[in-house]
Image 1 (cartoon, rainbow, N blue to C red):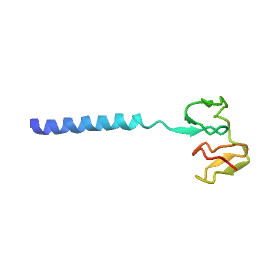
Image 2: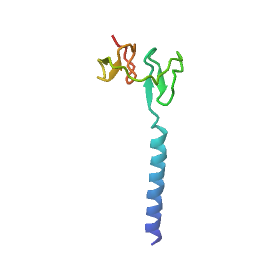
Image 3: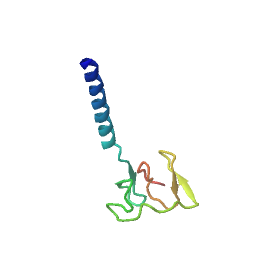
Image 4: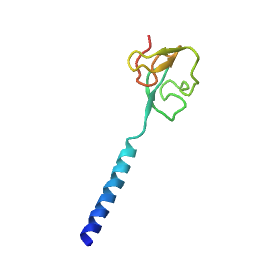
Amino acid sequence: MPYILDKITNSISKLTHREKTSSDFSETYIYCRFCGRKNPENRTSCKACKMRNDVAPSELLNVCEKCDSAVNYDDAYCFHCGTAIS
């Protein structure tokens, strides 16, 4: 019985460690639409150029050539992959 209890305890501790590890790397990033710098997704303005990243999408959209994401017509960089929009 102690052997089974040890196995269960070890499995639970591994699962808990895996959850902690995976959540440490779960922060997602976006790229500034004006300067192309990488920013945490929850920021409302760019760390580098201070322009707002939480602007509502416009009705006129372009498509990023690299990742096929829809981007605003006036964006200089794709918010998803950071590629310059031509």
